[in-house]
Image (cartoon, rainbow, N blue to C red; front, side, top):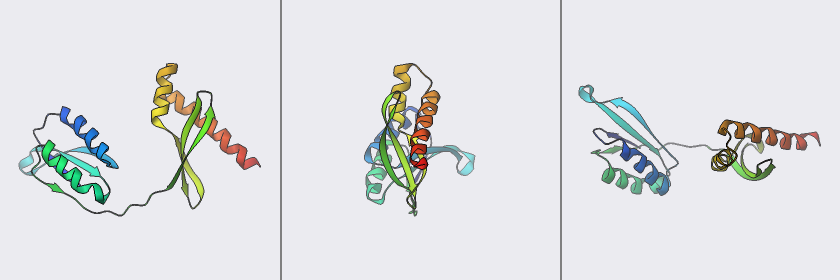
Length: 146
């Protein structure tokens, strides 16, 4: 769904993002655009499941300066996912594995856990991701050898 917003205090976006995500939106983002007569505005885009649409529309209409919302239905394909705890030098970390046709296509350490590790160990988040990625690669390699 898209709502065109102009003349709105920028601080409201952070508040709005939190509320929309709490309702259950899958994703949310903004784009700078120009409207008729070359007026600058912000386009608010929300991706959500159909059952959340009414609640999110109501929130946006109440909390923003927009006078209307456009929305479309889209088809969506997703990879199968499974979260596995893997032992690392930082402790057990949740790793989200994504599968396509039963094979691991990609994986990612859980952001919130990596963030806590980076703060606790006073390390760059990038370093934490690299360390955990190395550990996961070794973990996966142990299955391929057998």
